[in-house]
Length: 464
Image (cartoon, rainbow, N blue to C red; front, side, top):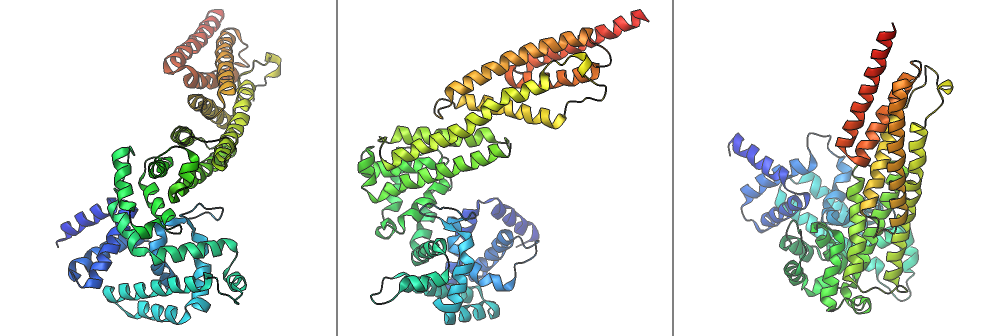
């Protein structure tokens, strides 16, 4: 291929979603194993690996590479945090301990042979074959160590691998590697993006899931996890469970293997709320509206699609999520009027010194908080914050309007010694007006402030 053609191919491959890149790599690796299109497969694989690995950055240490290669099929299911995970997720932090166990006790001979093959072989087909063998050895070692054997203290063996979180992830790693082919086949059948998850698409996905090995209790969460990755709204996964139960009654849904989809959706909603609470504590309101909409739509969707009982596990989970997000939002919402008053309150002239200033950083933060209250007002009903949000927003509008008018008057007749501070307050008030009333009103108040300053200057000029 010419240089221009190569660059076009790299640009095309770089624009693909990570899941599509991983799928292409796996398909070309299989092609190499079968001996088909070796030249083309090697070339495209080389380009893909350069993009995925970002070879312009320092390469990972050679000793880390065997584990990365063996665990590559786990990528769609890995999460970076070390907290609680839902079915169908694996903690990335558990993999080093699992690999250490494999090299030490689980499959030491196979691990050593694989590493030697990886270091010595330059043939992609040979590496792919060695990788498959090692993955099979890993799956078998995990089956052996997690199997209940009479007379064998399995718990004592498992404790040597790591804490309970690692042991839980160990079982998940074994499930994915044991069913790698069927999961990869499912990933290839699913659309890359599923927008409106309507009846037609729900039926299509259910058809793709209609494989006995995918519907076991250990594998189904990973299959559903692949679907969740393609959904525009993760909570919509519960539609599969409702369709399989042929009812929206939560007891009937929970009685099917696909009831795990509801558990997964509620876990993800809880995780979103935890992220939201963290952002509120850190006063990070960038893209806050989008994240709040995810929580709002998820809660409304679950409550609409499922007939939940208040005293059931799922019903209590939904209630707890609503309470959690409501408490976090209420406390922050109620603090906003006080922050606004501290910035805009009319101090007597005698209390203002020539060096007093309004902190621009605080103005920016309060402006973001007012926007935060406005966003909450949009989603107030579903999040159980309707009363506090409407009351606070109304209070803010009234106070900012009166304060802005008072500041305009103070600019007309105030002492020149305090004019600079009053003007800084006015600038802050105009920014708040734009959030609460829109640009037109803010522009009107800005002109009023300018006219007040001009009138003062003319008065001073006549006096002189």
